[in-house]
Image (cartoon, rainbow over all chains, first blue to last red):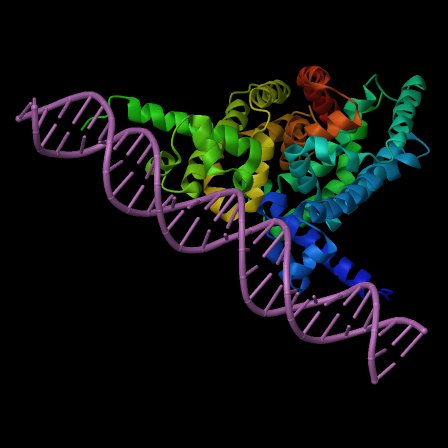
Length: 203
Length: 203
DNA sequence: CGCAATATTAACCAAATGGTTAAACCAAGG
DNA sequence: CCTTGGTTTAACCATTTGGTTAATATTGCG
C-alpha cells in the first residue's frame, strides 16, 4: 500500500492533459486517446484513474468552473466602493481570461450541452453576489450612480470582459487582427472596459 | 428527368433538420442519424443530397452565418446618426437572437473549432464596417461623443447583445431565473442596452 | 528476500458512427 | 406500357472510439 506521490503525480498529469484537450476541443470532440497521448501514458491508465470519459470530464470541468467563478466572486467580495470594485473586477477577470483564453467558451459550451448535470459545479461563492447587489444599491442610495438593476449591471460587466475571448476568431477576422494585435486589444480593454462601464452608470 | 419541387423540398427539409440538430448539439456531437430522424428520412438520403457530414455542416453553417452577419452589417448600414444607429442595431440584433437564441454560441463554437476553414463563411457585408467607423469618427468630430476606438465600441455592442444568449444557462442559474424570467430580462435589455452604450460614449 | 498492493501496459472487444451499395420506387416522355 | 432518370430505402461495411481484461512491472514492507 501507500501512494508516495506518483499516483497523485500521474493523476495530476492526466488532469492537466485532459484540461488541455477538453478545453481546446470540447467534451464531444475530445478523444480519450488524445488525452492519453498528451499525458504520455496508456489509454487504459486513464480509465484506471478516472473510470470513464464522463468522470474525467467532470474532474476537468469542476476545476475550470471553480477557477472561473472563484475569480468572479472573489474580486467582487473585497471592494470598498462600487467604482473601485468594478475596476478591480474587470482587471482580475481579464487577467484570468488572458491566462486561460479558452475558458469562457468552454464553460458556456458545456453548460449549454448539459445544463442540468453541470449546474452543481457552478454553485460557488454565490453569496458574494448579494454583496454586489448591496454595493450597487448603496451607491445608488448615495446618489453616485443612476438607477440600474444590479443583475443587469453584472451581466454587462461579464459580457464586456468575456465576449472578446468567446468571439475571438470572429473578431480577429472582422477587424483583420493577428495574434499580436488581438493581445494588444485585450491589454487595452483591461483598462478601458471598467471606465466604459463606470461612465454609463455614473449619476 | 425533372425535379418538380420534391428535390428542393427534401433538400430544404434536410437543411432545416440539420440546422436544428447541429445548432443544438454542435458539429462534433451531432449525429447523422439524428438529422435523418429529424427530417423523417433515411440516413442514406442525407448522403445523396449532401455527400458527407462536413458538407452538410457547411450548408447549415453558411446559412446561419449569413443570417447573423447580414443582420449585423445590415442594420449598421442604414443609420442617419450614431445614436439612432446604435439603437436600431441593438434592437435588430436582439430580435435576431430572440428568434434564434442558439446562433451566437453555435457560431462561436464552430469558428473556434475550425477558424481557417470557416473564415470564408463570415466574409459578408464587411464593407459596412467602414461605414460604421466613419459614423463614429463623424460623431466624434461633431463633439457628440468622447474619443473611442470604433472597433472597441463595436465589440462592446456585440458583447452586450450576444453574451446573455451565449451564457444563458449560467445566467439563469446565477440569478435564479426560469425561462419566463429570462425572456423578460431579454425584452428589457432590448431597450436598456442601447442607452447603456450611449451613456458611456456621450461627450 | 519475497509478498502484497498498486501502477502500467498491450491486446482486445462491442457499440456507435460515418459512409457505401445495390436494389426498389416513381414520375415523365416516347 | 415500358424505358429512363432521378429519388428513396434496407442492408451492409470499415473505422473510430470508449471501455475492458489479463498479464507485467514497480514499489513498499515484514
